[in-house]
Image (cartoon, rainbow, N blue to C red; front, side, top):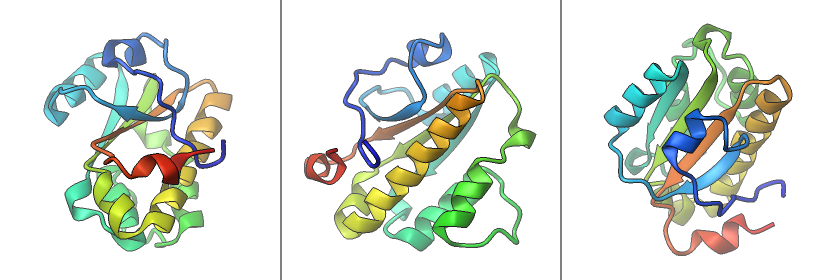
Length: 153
């Protein structure tokens, strides 16, 4: 499933309890990003929030991830550099990494091919971290009705 998105029903408490394997998931929870950040901090997880209302293409996605994860300003703006940076989160030490991508439907509608690539990069990074014993969970909230075809295996 190189670009697939799991349809598993994810609960935030299960994420922090280690009951959710690393991966990219649709998320229907209603917690605010601030509440999720607090829950992550109290569980010793790094939390990164992407406001998808401002993410419509590759450039804005890479910039949003870089800002949320506090990448150095010199980070390159391409898919390979993004993946490399997400694989080097040593400064964000903790029990795991949680990314919430709110309103993911915006990019899915405006740039479907780039959206699929973004999900693929996030999935590859989650698999990378899983192999190292540190979970990375990516939650996409409000993906929109049309994303199922984009995200199928």
